[in-house]
Length: 322
Image 1 (cartoon, rainbow, N blue to C red):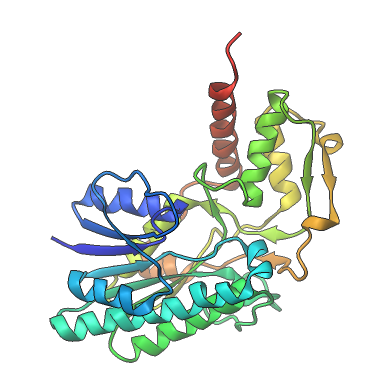
Image 2 (image 1 turned 135 degrees about the horizontal axis):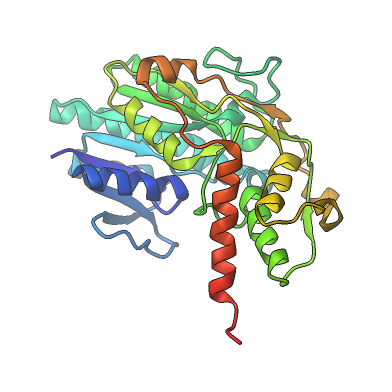
């Protein structure tokens, strides 16, 4: 039986990955942060720990000797990383490198290959000169999140040259109803649902002109699994290849809720505009399509629609009965 170790298990991608692996019959172990409630994940063996405590996590990995390691853990809110760049560097950068070294030590001790997947990010490209971006696009991050992710991304290649089957999945924005409310996409869909139910009257956002490439989170988890099990380790851009602005996302969300005159319900607050923000991140996933046979299965409007429908249902279930 394959044994897999997953970090970031409490997040959106971690939950989808756990479900997929358990369905395959994989033995799943996961790192649950010391200060967070244990996630309700039947079938997953949870281990309390802190990814930044590198030696403790290394001892755990050497004891478990997993066949696969998926590092999904990160401070995932780009906005938050501006207020805590030191912790961002530790979690998104240094701790990821510690995990790479731990995986290599497991491989050397056990004599069995270990497959490692680093959840990288389109934010490593910063303000790219060309669109769409692919694996050859220069790495020029413009925020603490992207800079820390860039360090981990580059170190994946270092460990690949040391004999580890190390993969960097350069994930573009991917969403689902499991996104926490602090993410702008979930803020949009949950507020649209609240406006529809009469419990909110306005959606307040930052820059509406930022363009992103949004996909369906389970598709991106599938890509990471395919990359882990490919014959040759490599870097892969995982994206739909289609860009939309935040304004497009807002319009699609209101439209799904049956509100067409949405502009009067939306305002912009400079407080929500980041100091520096990549403005046009759209990915070219040609390598993943050809080498992994991967392709997205859910288009932009349906991604937004599924999130809105889930939030509408959530508001309905939480509304007091009359």
